[in-house]
Picture 1: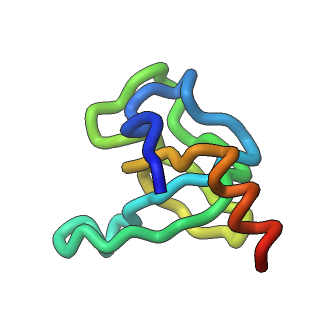
Picture 2: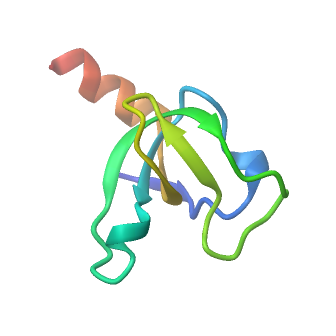
Length: 79
């Protein structure tokens, strides 16, 4: 899948966007969790470790990768 941004800028993230996040307990391992943004939790416009979000399933973490929306939509249509 293609990446369009690293998730450190709040302006690049919005509700409904497909992203990979790293949860706090996974920071050491770097394990990523993929999901759809439900809410942006970081108030500032930039964060060096990634903008903190809540996914639709309730998972909270910092965005490490933003997935191209077109690619995500195509994959969802195939499921």
